[in-house]
Image 1 (cartoon, rainbow, N blue to C red):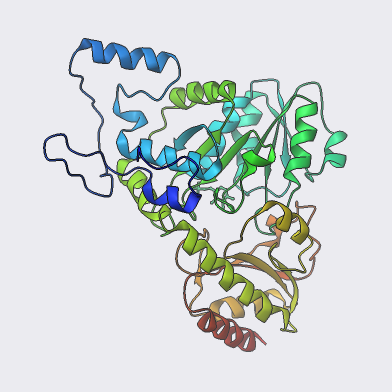
Image 2: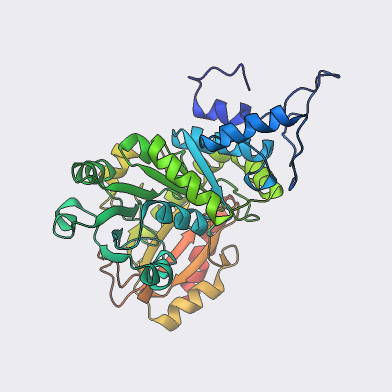
Length: 398
Ligand SMILES: *Cc1c(COP(=O)(O)O)cnc(C)c1O
């Protein structure tokens, strides 16, 4: 909206960005920008087309064809820039596709990439498939500057991290990692799906590239796949622009519209998820079966001080170790009524995942050998119902 002051708070911007333009004849407009579906775009005259081609050659958002998307996509890009405090946004058809396009923009054959050992599991398949064939070397490591100092090589180009990390929510010191990377002329990229730009803003902490799976809290309703890459630096933006174009990524207008629909309520949803998750932590802390809770907003989490320093809120994600054998842990999960068994998170509903501990055996943060690991997404149900559900399922397991 042209008349929204730039210094408005994020909660306000999220309600006013991407409103539909007024119709010149009627002077009216729907509040919500429609899902503008287009493959083919037509021009009033050749001068209009020329202007678009010139802008495109400069790497600006100019539409000559439907692949980059029209008003719906432009509004969503603007929202992601506001969320992340960035200048340039590139949409991708999934969060993983956003990670892939970011890394392929930054790396060439012969380069070395350092990846935090706590990253989202499927990222490791990039290494085993694409990167190996492309001659890009990958090292996984605990993402702290002391450890990384011994791993940087002459051909290292990028450090790729995720904070808090997947499954165990290990908080990383992003400002320290950014200064480490920049003194060595490396690019620091992070997965910010956990924060989704609202409760954690990596670009403001010195990170160069922030990547969000819009599939999770931005969409918020478990019904779309979408990713975004956000940067400030014009040189990085140009590399992303070219690679994104070459890879032919396109996001459906309907998915962009659903993401816009979802993101309006991101702040109130996130606060409610966070409130519920803390209540669940308090409950779990009193259960004898629970050995350890992983949730950075929980005061006993080792990442709590970093979380307090760098984040402005939390969300519904937590994991906990259970002193139960696999059979009892399976009984616990099967007995839950309100927690759907499934991957993913960020929707309105509660979810549970019995984590295969092989998935965290490569995380230096994991010390729970012998325990079962359960990840919860605390949804928007009444938290007392969720706690009662967890209590009956734990009783059932024992
Ligand atoms: C889900 C997820 C992704 C991938 O997003 P998709 O849209 O499912 O491809 C990336 N990073 C994190 C941390 C995730 O949880």
